[in-house]
Structures are given as C-alpha cells and as structure tokens.
Image (cartoon, rainbow, N blue to C red; front, top):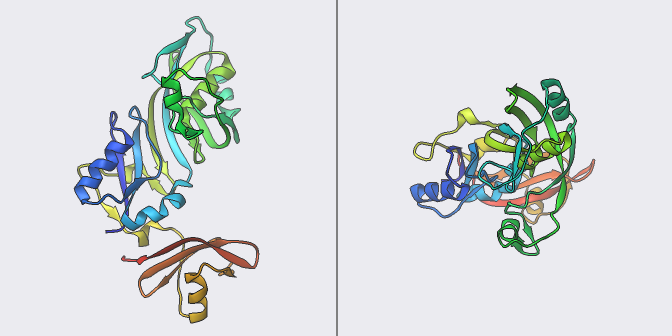
Length: 282
C-alpha cells in the first residue's frame, strides 16, 4: 500500500520510534516522516509509506501550526525543560501587552539561528554531537516565515501561544529569541503540532490505530491523464513542456500510473519536479 499516515505522536516518543512502530506493523522499511518532533513534543506527524516516500520533499514544504507553552524566568542549553538551566532571572516585570507586542514583532519572519541541540549537520556532523562534546562551532542561520502568532494565555510565570510557520522553523529557538528580545530568559515547556499543510491534528490516529490515505487523495494538485504520445514521451524523459491551464503544479498519469509531477518553469513552460512511475491506486 502506498500513501500517507497521520499520527498523533505522544510525549516521550521520538520521531524514529513512531516510524519504527508503523514500519513493523505494516511490514515495510519504506517509511519516512515529513518533519521531526522532539520527544517532549506531541501532535501531528505525517508519515509516507512505500512509494509515498517519493513525495516527502513536496509534503515537507508545507506550513505548520503549533501551540507552545513557555516557562518564563529561566533558560536551558536545549531551549526546553529537558535541558540544563544556564540562565535565571526571577525578578522580572512583564505585562501582557508588552508580551503581545513582542510576539507580533516577529511577523512576517526573521533570520533564525539553528539551536545547538538539533540534528542539522555542519561539516558532516549533527550539531547535537558538537554540543555533547563541548565543541564550539558557528551555528547556521536561515530566514524563517512567521505567518501568524498570537498569545493565548499568560499568568505571570508562563504563557501559551499559537504560531503558524514555514518549513524549518524551530519553535524552541523562536521562544529563546522572544526571551532575548525582552531580556527575560524563557524555555519551552510543552509543544503540540496541530497542522501540516492541509492536514490537521484531529484527523490523526495513534500508533495503534490509524488509516492510510491513498496518494490519489494525498496530492492536492491538478491531475491530468496523458493521452498524447508525444507529450507522454516528453514527460517520461523529464523534458520541458508547455504550461497546462496556467497551473503551478500538475500530476500526470497514464492508465492508473503516476508518471511525474511538473511545476511552473516560466509563463509558457513547465519543468519536471519529480519522476514517480508507480501505480496510482485510489
């Protein structure tokens, strides 16, 4: 079976734990996920099964929504409560309006430094290995988009906020940056991912009970059956083709087989984004 699976990850599980459990249940090694969740975090994971793994790159490009709970007054080396406290400030003053204005200041995005305790590779080695070995290294930075952010609650010692972000955004780092801007150390206490692209947490199952969504339903793009032999040859060979109905993305099929996904190249042409070549079972 090819497709995707929506899982509501429980606290304490690593993303690899979830993949291993589902892999064993389905008796296949061809399973990948579209975005890591730390063991502390809960919420939506989108898994790709068998030929669905060819679509991981497309699915990981989606925006994601989170709800995060933050402890105010201390900072840890991992930016969450599992880490070692490296900074404390008990006598601070922070009112709700100031906090709300600070959150909004991160719209529509900013240059974010990747956290030291992360799986991003630098010079062929994951950052958390440098951190564990006590090695100093320049942390990479990247632009991230903050689509929406709003305060949900604040009691003087902790607050909860909602945020919608682009691919590659670290919520732990965002929280740390909020604290730095306010000159008050902060750390992430809880995190729940509530949306990945068009998929929402309420649609997800558990590692014990889940459904597989077929690729026919997973791909929310125009599907076009190829009837012309000349066009078929171009698509199979990954050649440039003329634009189709002014669309940005098109999935081409032939007799139930997914051939390729094409994306807009310019105003008149489309280029091959991904060769697929598998049965497109509904």
